[in-house]
Length: 101
Image 1 (spheres, rainbow, N blue to C red):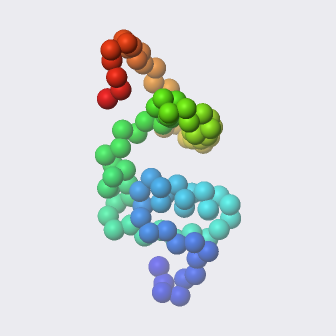
Image 2 (tube, rainbow, N blue to C red):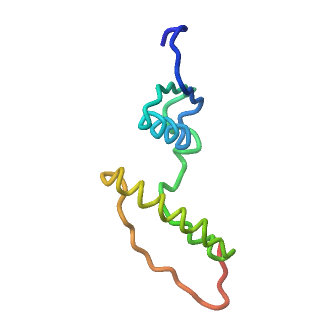
Image 3 (cartoon, helix red, strand yellow):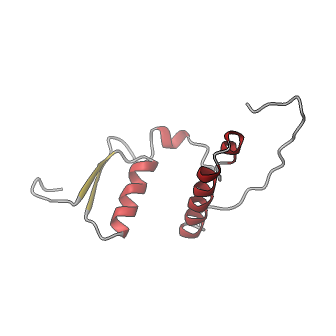
């Protein structure tokens, strides 16, 4: 990278959020630069569960709009990256005396 290079947007941090912003901006036609101290997604993102969920935990607090937005975003990611996103079905046990962890 030359010192005279100009970008419409320059992102510092190549974690999931930084890379996501870079991808989105580049897809919209912006010239984008990215700086990361280590390898991409080597920090917090590397310790992530890698789950793309729909925000069901927000139902407990009646955050219906947030759940709807999370489900929409999940579908977008699923369609953008079907090679790395796949459904994982599971059973969630329930008992009246149980509470969320």
